[in-house]
Length: 287
Image 1 (cartoon, helix red, strand yellow):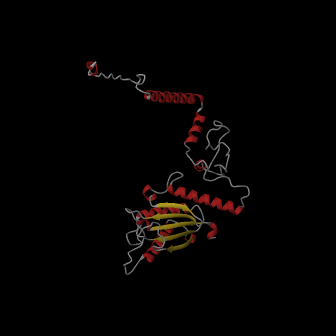
Image 2 (tube, helix red, strand yellow; image 1 turned 90 degrees about the vertical axis):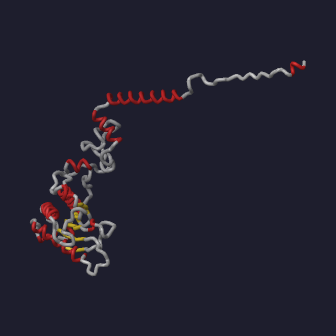
Image 3 (cartoon, helix red, strand yellow; image 1 turned 180 degrees about the vertical axis):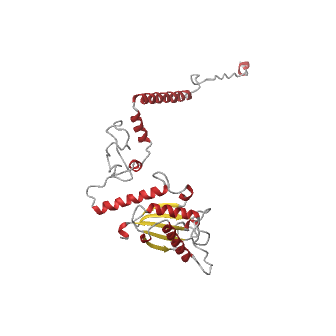
């Protein structure tokens, strides 16, 4: 009996392996992704085979529009009822559409202007017609509508905008290429080229013209600040250059210098503030 109590104690440990031996469920996720991709591929193949070229273009334009949808809208009923939501052949569902009288294909496709409403009076119609003419002149000068009247280098000096006063053509200095000899009103060849092009563009309309000169600020420590005289002289030189290019002198309504009082760039001494503004005035402002 004593011998039995002092015998060795044997502990048996049993290892239990869980799982079915298939390394978990990660392979199921990968297989599901593969099946989904294959299904999407076969659906795409079916869609390409079941639709026409026009219908596919309509789908592509819907998901990746090439022009703003709010400016022109068209298309037929249903998903595949029309050629494209931007086509000119279909009636617009909202707005006035892109078509207008005597429209160019480029402008009509962009939808920049539409048919005037029936209740538009004659004065408003004339104003809209004049605004369109000024936009066309700006496009002709910068080459947006076709061949440009200016070299690529000269175009870098110009920006245009349409305001309540008329068509503003802003001509400004570049760091590496100023319009005038430094600190003077002596024009450089690039300005002469621009003046000739502007005069040619303005020759197709009878509107009045104004010229304004602006210069950058100078250090306040200068005893004699030349900004007023310099801006006025440069504006007068631009007037003279346009007249030499056969612009009718009777159309010049205003030549002014604004010194450094209206900077175009935040740093008042920036080169960008050296500029000329040639304005083709609206007809009701000078007649």
